[in-house]
Length: 107
Figure 1: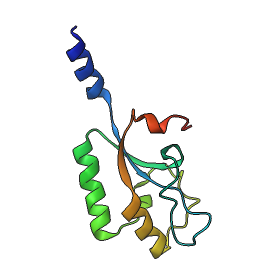
Figure 2: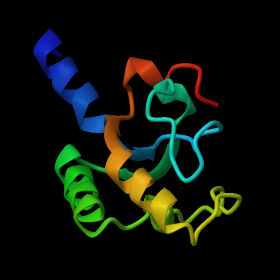
Figure 3: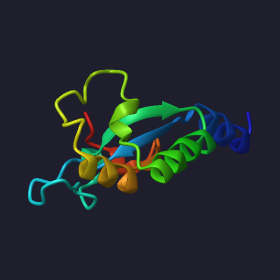
Figure 4: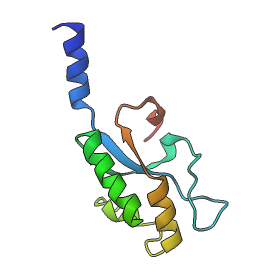
């Protein structure tokens, strides 16, 4: 296998995460968009950046809280009916490749 095909194979296995920043401890109804990416919450996983970006664009257009996409129940501790918080999550959510070095330290 050539070095180029190894890189292509590695890229084929990468997935994309729709992530949202943690809630702000200092500002009510807001998120901490400056928090390290390792502290952000993974809401959903996608096979391609295009799929992730499409969902993200829809969330931001409709200002839908990304927490609604969580099927694991891990985010149940967050408030679900805080309209301002939902908007802050949608505006600040982002798509991140699963092997992004900034995710190091994420448990």
